[in-house]
Image (cartoon, rainbow, N blue to C red; front, top):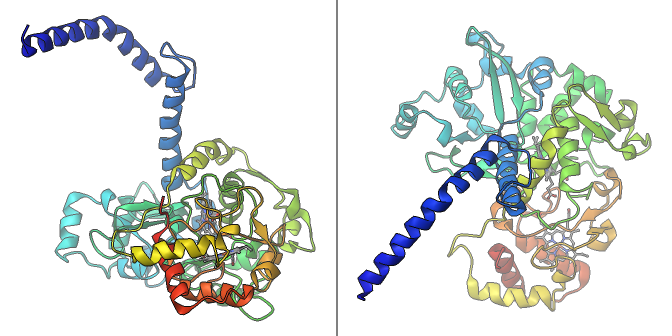
Length: 455
Ligand code: HEC
Ligand code: HEC
């Protein structure tokens, strides 16, 4: 028999087998698609698990990108932000928010949501970036990352809500600066949350909550700056440290967190803990949130006075989404740095220092770059003040996972960006721990940090 002949027999046999099994196979697929609830289908539990993975990924991504959890009642209803976006010319108040202003405060545009014609016009510079009506068109196309416009039957903007992606997604700038494909989990260090909230024509509700006047609220918001937000302000009302520094922290990356036990700069809890916290207490979505630690009037006077330790809404628009949101979050990898963006030879030397002489790996344990287990330290242990630590239940700082640190060099390092560069961070450890690093050691460690994840 020739080679071709034997191949022919195998192909024929394959087709016959395929025909034999096809109806069964098709029936299995049908069942999975029709009924998303995990059941042990004809194809076995492994297939049920696979189908569940796909479902969780899709739902979680959708929640992360598009869900407002009903928070329009706060951002539109209470703060009336939509009126500031529209501007007086379109039925709102003030000058309105042009695309240039929106991009200027760090909002990003999802190029994939733009109609093809608009993309072309944008490339040719034919879009009016100074007209708030253009912003409304972008919102209508659902193209402003992290912001949802609600439009009435008459086509006017009637409310606005925010999504996780507002702070935790940026874009790859492929079409224009601030316009590109989504990069979920990447910290938006351009986003000026304080300036955006400050656009609201009515901040009286926030002033009442914090027990201050409206100008004070506006001054606090203006003090945050790009890439920062104060998640603890609405719990303790402490807008500034005793030294006068802003209470706002940098927006951290939300990728590379699988395997990491404690989250946020100060280790409030796990990913799903914090997701529930943020969706309920920060975004003002409608759900359920329970944490008795917030009932302590000494540490959290605002939270205790307002019952933030036990929040319940009916219907609950958050809890049913937590599982998939958690799953999606954990699936976001820390992105590998582009080739050539760091000095590989120096990074290799830095890796030795990190695990050896510099003693970094004792806390930043590779490849998680945080401690497996309980990853919290007192301020004293890392040689800084305890202001931000004192605003969290454990009064400690969490060892930052370092993979993908190259994506968030803007805004500085440590929770409040007190170190402008990675070299400043390394020099801080050199002083604090008496490491006696040479200038070359510092450079090597920096190049290593910028190379992560390296495995
Ligand atoms: C207004 C900006 C903003 C929005 C919206 C927002 N976050 Fe965050 N997120 C932050 C800031 C700031 C922190 C750090 C808080 C801290 O440490 O006190 C943070 C922390 C986190 C962390 C911890 C990261 C780490 O290093 O451990 C996760 C996970 C996270 N957010 C997920 C989400 C999800 C999911 C949503 C939507 C439900 C969301 N965030 C909405 C600003 C935001
Ligand atoms: C005692 C434990 C410990 C040791 C040792 C340690 N770190 Fe850290 N590291 C931390 C903690 C805790 C933080 C978070 C500080 C904060 O939130 O302000 C941190 C933060 C960082 C950050 C900032 C990350 C960010 O996103 O802003 C970098 C970079 C860093 N460490 C690098 C190093 C290097 C390099 C070494 C060795 C020279 C080292 N660390 C040694 C505990 C440690």
